Amino acid sequence: MAAENEKSGWLLKWPAPAKLNLMLRIVGQREDGYHLLQTVFQFVEWCDWLSFHPVNDGVVRLSSPTAGVPEQEDLIVRAANLLKHATGCKQGVQISVEKNLPMGGGLGGGSSDAATTLVVLNKLWGTQLSRSALMALGLQLGADVPVFVNGHAAWAEGVGELLTDIDLPEHWIVILKPACHVDTKEIFSAKGLTRNSKRITMDEFVAGEQINDCLATVRKLYQPIGNALDDLSLYADAKLTGTGACVFAEFSSKEQAGLAYSALSGKWQACLTKAINRSSVYAEIEWLDKS
Image (cartoon, rainbow, N blue to C red; front, top):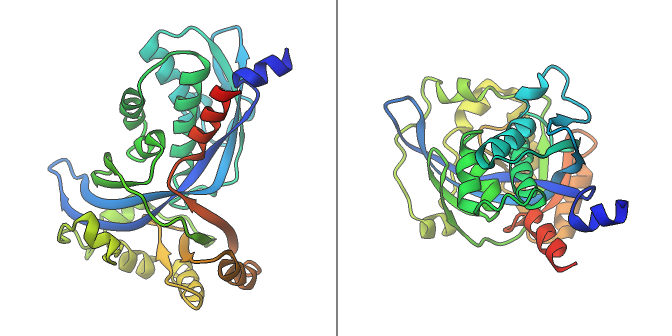
């Protein structure tokens, strides 16, 4: 029975990859206060892992709820229940999470977990929603969820939900996580934050227009992030992902990235990983379909 469940996708470990914002421009603000953005998302191989176990009582639960977060408010549980409500599915599930991505790092870990839950349960439950329908559900959970559901590196506009697939070099990446948590609302409400950057095209981004309008404000308010950027910039062009706290740099070879990682991992929480244009969760679904 266990082998049969694994072949059908139950009990497998499913990836929820991190994302990086390769640039972030604030090009305006809506009347409701939300900022209008231009940004570029790319995934990396570093990920959380989720496992799904069928249960007969129709209830969605976590095997190990996050401390301090009511279980029904957890993004993973909300995602599963949203899919159940949207499709009339009566099935239940117990979800296990191997959490590797740091909370509050700007890597989208919670959003990615929610997206993997939507994509995988849509497959395992046989609810058969289209990818665009799943993206619409994901937007109800957070602005970053649709890009993970879409599963491809993307040029994003609006509040981050208007996506156009983009193919980018898949560099080796070193990510540093300073020991602080950035309050995103604080950054976007900060006095002096640039809110009127000129819109650019994808071609201009590829040619090198890759600023992050939040960088100066984050550096000013969070000294550890500035220190991490300074340390990483000794090895490559160090960037802030989103509003942080994580910073990263791209390298053309694993050897170059490895040298930076080795030098910095004793001082910082660090990860050596690889950029990917296609989310690893869809590669797993393709494997399952062929098995």
